[in-house]
Image (cartoon, rainbow, N blue to C red; front, top):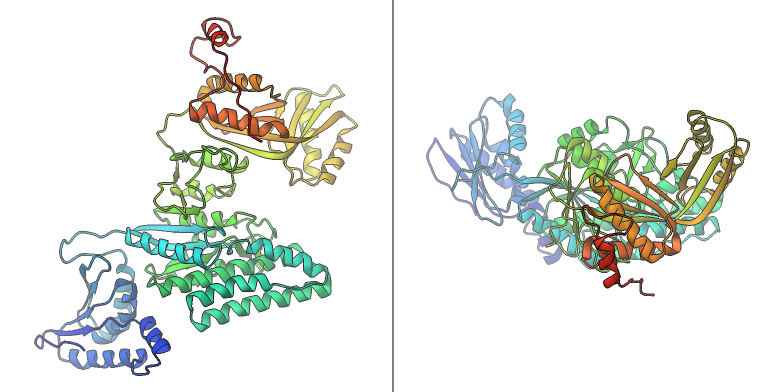
Length: 620
């Protein structure tokens, strides 16, 4: 059971590998009451006290995997009795042993010594064999709804996390979205409640099926059941009051994340990875009160860092709710769709982690939407600015503002595929060395183009300031624009209420004519604008060959994007043919070469006549 040796100067206590959770599990499944973890640990502590009473130092040999080493911490506090104490900890899976020391001292210093040990155990790992530092890569990992869509996917993700730990990563936080389509289901349940029907059976079945499939402890089932019961009670209130405000909607959708993190954390513990479920507000995610699209409050970085330092053991995986937070009054808020990405980058940046990993269902950030372009390829490296522009102009990989915390603190963000973990994915950082003409192609569909022409002799300053004053009055946000002294063209995405656009046009009428064009799309190239002449020469040749009309063009102030406004019915052909040219090496036109005249005359024009390109159309 344990070995004793040494002299009055040394006492050795060897603890067997019976962590708390294993002992509990053995009791629960075998019905054998002989293994009582509480009695076992008390016995061990009492024996340590007796054996170390006359010793000047104590060695505690914890022959258990490092994942359960924290269960032996109490023995250190008791057995040292103010004398120098050590713990030899077996590292899994490497089977190396490391020796930690807890300095001796007077009784009043016992708490200080133990705290110092706990602080250093994760960062000072000295192996007995090599004496080299065994540094871990601290990361925040984020998993979206499709990655944890059901019990099988949760099982896959938790084992993936365990594999990442074995590979040298240390997840300080795992940020999770709601399982599968739970958020959409909750929103639909809210609509049904307004009609007098309250039903969350499908949501309850999804979560309880996962709990039953894994055989999770009863307390996990009780916690999830309590949350779902609370959700159902809230919907009954909505049905009675016939009211569902933005504040209530935020609380309603929060139940998805709050249930998912409890299941993921419990499954991690079950497979030997110490984890705890954490609601985001308990680790400092505090927002303003803009329900439905809340923003993190200034200074959140210190709050998050302090919370992780004081509440979360570095060797325990904190499974944190993404997408949600609380305002200063303790009311639940949401960060907008895709806000889980922001939750992950905010935690990673605040804690100064080595990397943020965003796990999706594609092999990183792709050169185009794979649902349209079959041959879209991953972009290995791109800058924060490029990633932010891609997100803003329609790419579904990252939240539009998710890059801001990482950019501010210089934390790399790696986008990986949870369905294909071996893929390298895409790394987003301050800069990259890739010499490429175009990084990616994206689009935003269903936009409206507004052309405004001044009818009065207003200078550019007076005209533009008046136009944007009217737009601001109706809270209209502009995507792209192009302007001259007496005219301006701009776009609104489909989130802008039509009533607000119509009211703004009425306000413009006294000093300008305004024409609204519907069913338009923005095509955006994330490109090296220092070589914009080469990019534009190829783009307009493709558009000319395809008879695609450009209604507006804009080069962003960011200097990494060029945007074109086209008709909705032409956007797919435009993307496909540009992707052929920039990424697949089968352009439908001759590429532009240095020294060539852009009007089509000269050698290149002759070449074009001899070998006319094949115009490739999108398959129906």
